[in-house]
Length: 179
Image 1 (cartoon, rainbow, N blue to C red):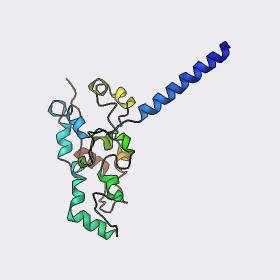
Image 2 (cartoon, one colour):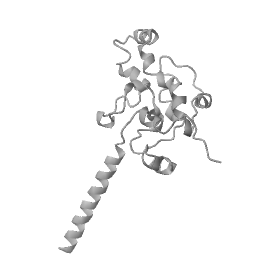
Image 3 (cartoon, rainbow, N blue to C red):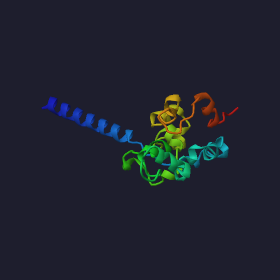
Image 4 (cartoon, rainbow, N blue to C red):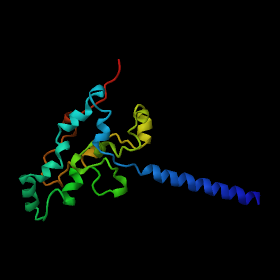
């Protein structure tokens, strides 16, 4: 009987651990408004840098005549702001399960912080963000060239040569170090 109780207890514990892990892995996309709250002028103005970038306008540009011409040239039909072929690179989290989109998330953000850094629901708190290892453990990604070339590649109909170092420097938004 003791052996059975021990096995049952271990099974329940294992089930609890695995179910908690799957919930923790379901980080939600919270949108740039949540990032803006902390990443302003006091921390290096990352939000301003992003908001002045092409990434911030990635969704908006899909409403342009140029985007409509690209869609026509590709023999696609419909509004570029609604086509999966366009949204997959012009919107953060396009195609993910709707339960992973927090109320604060919006497609109008275009290519927001979470496109590069991963869904922020679990790492966005200051207590987590102040420790990079904790933030990474909570789902934050450290972007690299592989992150960028998921969209910046020759499969894009408007592709221009992509030099990672050059373009990464344009969007750099480091957190200042204290001296």
